[in-house]
Amino acid sequence: MNSRLLQTLYRTAQNRAFTSRVGSSANYSCGITNGGSVSQLGIQKTSFLSNTHTAFSLARGHKMIICSAVAADLSIFSHGIGIRLATTQAKAPPQARQMGALKVSMLSPGIIYEPYSPRQPIPFWQRWFTRSGWRRTKDDIILELKSAYAIAKLRKKGYSKKQFYEEAVNLYKEINTLIANGDKTSLRKAVTENMYSALKNEIKLRESKWNKVYWEMILPVVKIRTLRARLIGVDRSDLEKVFVQLTLEILAKQKFEAYNAEGAVVAGDKSKEVLVRDIWVFEKSLFHEGAFWRLCGRIPI
Image (cartoon, rainbow, N blue to C red; front, side, top):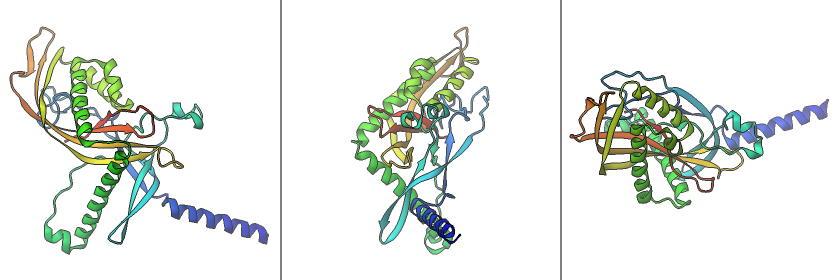
């Protein structure tokens, strides 16, 4: 009995030590799937091809919230204060898991990890002279450090901001053109699986209202900037197996016009340029050879 008791205590101590190194199992990170949200054909705030507010008041589905457990904690230190950065653990799709653990190769985690939302400004006195302000400052620093860490990881793989922005603008134009033309076959290659399902539903809904759509983007874009960068781990035992997600704000001038079955204009005016703001999330695998950037989500504005 004594030997069994000692073995039990020894295993318990080992489990606690492992938990303290990896991180508490109570830590979770939340993401938004794109399959549950359908946004349609609007102007000004978001692209004509992706906004909810239209003359037809097209309905949106409910967002699906997914939580994924923290996979690994990477600690860095700034001015003597330890700040913990994390990547999330994403599970492979059921059809991939059936192939066996050694053959699983995820094409996308299927979520937007920590979706971007603008931080509300707070007064200077509140930020520096109140406990709530100190907590807010700490949270802001951690958010920025997570982005910095993801960008640093990306640069090791040859990332160039200028080159990526050029690629993102081309992808933005290509995807919007494919949506306007209803080209679902080509669209599948430019977006993730969940995003493709959402866009396919959007195209189907739009085609039930409008027979044809004209869309054009005026180059160069007015503004493009990175709002957030995040890493998503897919293998607890290998921190190199990660996906990176970059959230971009794109401000561009666009032209839009929609036609009915008789060819008459029913919405928009292609002779007028409208300034449109979109927030898109681009994703890329850092461990698949020949991986390329794809659209994995759009953030409602």
